[in-house]
Image 1: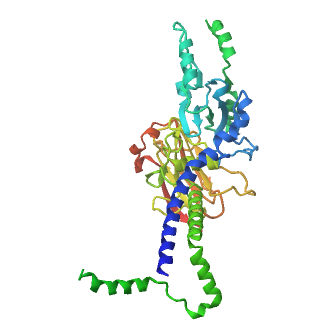
Image 2 (image 1 turned 90 degrees about the horizontal axis):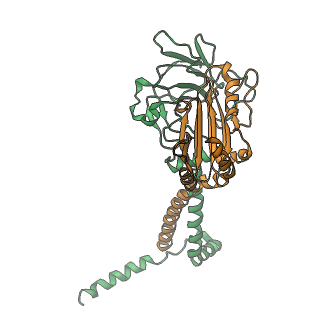
Image 3 (image 1 turned 30 degrees about the vertical axis):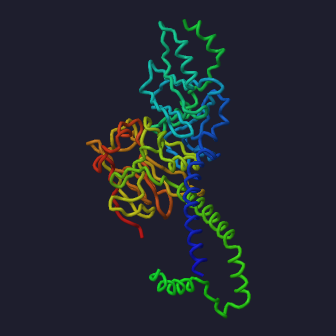
Length: 203
Length: 234
């Protein structure tokens, strides 16, 4: 009887150790396997030139759309996302500053790796280029010394991710403007062909 | 040698104790059968038991830890909890798992800071039937919003009333401080209606474009709004 009990205790201990290993593995695997995270959900917007609105602030009688997936969104902040896949080329996010405060944040699966607000804008324009290390080196090599690029270049940790656009509507009357300001941001993939065509024109 | 001889009877008796004790008669034939099967298949059975225990406990605990709010990473400031690392690339694995499961897009460090409160300054849980005064100053920020939400999904039949105040629209006193009253009944001044009839509520303060996101340690009780309970309906 004692022998069986001892074995039972050993088995329980092994089970608990296994539970610990499974727990750690599961927690680490959730972000990788999740299909409900922001990066996976935003994939559908990859082909659009403008952010996909994921939370539009309520205006007048129009309530916020129920399809917004954000669990507890800020009712005064319009949110849009642009998904990118750097395998297709660098991602260029251009925003013009307006009366409303705007912020851009680049998120990868591990979390946000860069964020900037419209206070960093140069002459009313905020140009963010997200690229891989190789694309960054290429862009540096292609840089014209006499006419340095004003782009803010950010090296992304992963190929896939999202750029989140947030516009704050301080007053209810600014809410339609906030929704429009999110839509006014452009997210385009810099094609290599576009680059070579665009360079001489820029000089 | 001579020492071993007196020792051997004792050892034999100890070995006798280890032998499985005879099963009580009351267990009967089936009990004896179960016991025999158990003893025969014990190694395989125990292995299955250990694996099942590990799998079930491990997955259940992982699910429990990543459901709902962030388990760690909060910094307590008075009644509030600041979440400076929720959106950072070096967030802890639990925070990342919670974000992934909820589809949450947290505020990045350069964007802003989220503070939440589920209790008042006395440490009592915020309840929808009670009224509270949330007031004072806020840490330096370009804009902030103060919102209230019940836990879980929104009640479908409820009319859409105010859910929060922004720094632009809140009414302030002459010294620039503000006071918002969270109550189920209409109040003069900044009235924030309770989001539900009863049950726990949470208050969120989002600071946008704020320098304190990078140095949450500099926040103290005086720099965040105080939450004072004014009274309860029931």
